[in-house]
Length: 275
Ligand SMILES: C[S@@+](CC[C@H](N)C(=O)[O-])C[C@H]1O[C@@H](n2cnc3c(N)ncnc32)[C@H](O)[C@@H]1O
Image 1 (cartoon, rainbow, N blue to C red):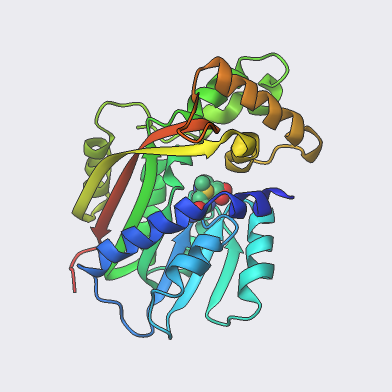
Image 2 (cartoon, rainbow, N blue to C red):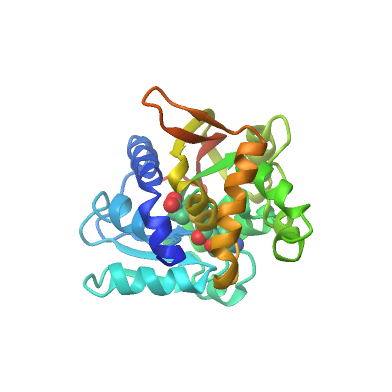
């Protein structure tokens, strides 16, 4: 299985979270029938296709963007060929100035699910989002904070064998990953950029990932390309690290699990004026 297929197999919880966040927004935001919608960090497109497309009005136009080209190719091949309302593009929301300039005040609604914990230049990303939103447009996002997945990365980055491959993982961390009150920090950045913050919450999440899937889960979530030939070994050694860090236990059915623990930050912001 390639990385995109692995991700789709192991992301049913992401789809459920996106559906829940969408429902929360629907209490505050009115969807225009032919609204233009952007999903940032869409990965292989399953969340965009399975959670957003069915929930949005039938005439909505939906664009998913991701900086990993292989995931975007997968998303286009799997979900966009039979649906003219949906397309995916290979775009980095931080550095792709041309995409931002070409989409100034184009989108009524922007979503981003579990992407911003990988964005170090958060303020620049938020400025770009602000630029691409229409006045009155909404921006809803989730991201993880205080995530024990990064303990695995940190541990492996110190192993001589893996240092050349993942030592740069910290460049992919949100600046507030380990601050005590990331909701307050992120609210301050949103306000600085010009957003009105309608709702921001933090909740502890605990996902029990069967150990049989743990190594593939880690490989599919690494936020940059790992050369194909090392993926299997990287995955199996990450499983050893999960045990070494005691992030595993055995559930009530006797199944060994990786206890993925993080705080989910969920936010709804609007570009004034709210219409
Ligand atoms: C954990 S996946 C989430 C995928 C999907 N949204 C979901 O909820 O399952 C995070 C995605 O964000 C993408 N990403 C990270 N930084 C990005 C950036 N600066 N611009 C665009 N995509 C980015 C990664 O490539 C990855 O596919």
